[in-house]
Image (tube, rainbow, N blue to C red; front, side):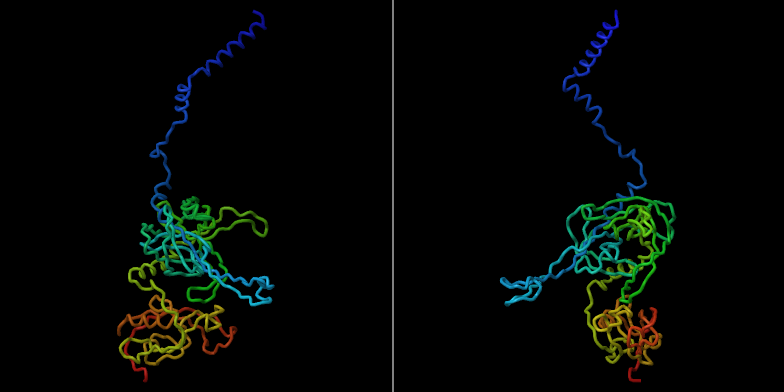
Length: 429
């Protein structure tokens, strides 16, 4: 057989083989294809230290919606030549309309029944707050219960929210290199419940904040100790949860570094979270308020001069006189040089306040855990006590404050906590 004939025979054999390969019926071909594509995975054989943890805590991570009121104005006058700038010919008028808009969104974590932990910057300047959950479109009304602006922590109360609370960990026991699971709502509500994983990259990172004000209104520059992680944190993750492999909440994702530095060095994988131990005092304060009912509704904002003495004789008093100072009536408070509260003008020498060490010029900022936003708050706290009881009073003391007339006269001060024992005394003595 010559080479040419051999080549023809081989070509015929290959052609017949190709024809036989496509000789199956459609049903036979479908059955053969089913064997390839109809597969399944036994989830019980897939192992991960994260699956069970996420299943237990993911539904307890919620969305926070920050609504704010915006006022719009427009010049309304057909035929006027003012062009909307508020001047023109004719009887033009400017109309104003206040509209509520969603200003920001963030995340939060349920830490007690109806109590949600988040960042302060997530709820800042809100006129209304709501909470949304993972598998529901309902928005639940929320109340700001406790906050510390300097630490960027806030606690909300959402009575209609029926979700399990997550267990709290001990951030003092964290170790560099252990897993960090972050859950939140990055970018928008459309990405609810996003989970990212990384490790604890560093502990005790001292991060200087911009100048801010504390919960009493005093402006200060603070340095917070943060947890560093390489788990992805994006806008909207703020206020969510950082969990360890035990499913415990150990941190609150708050910020990240991104972009490039001034030296054009690229920044990647640097996220920061607030240690949960920093938030525990506020969480405890909020739980006590919920269980006792204190602080659930806002106190009246009453300013003016008042006497907190025992002239009525039927309720214990501190034995001080003072004036309420706030941003509306004191430039020093408005400028953040002093906290708001009741500035003590006089102290009865034989009264409880004097016995405890409170002095004229002190600013009472908190009584029994209630921020002294008005004189009525102080009175309400005293009315809840009887003679012989001890009441906690926090003051801000700045030396020679009584003689301060300008901002330059105000030096650095300090917060001081007093335990004041209430007793009867003669205010006229």
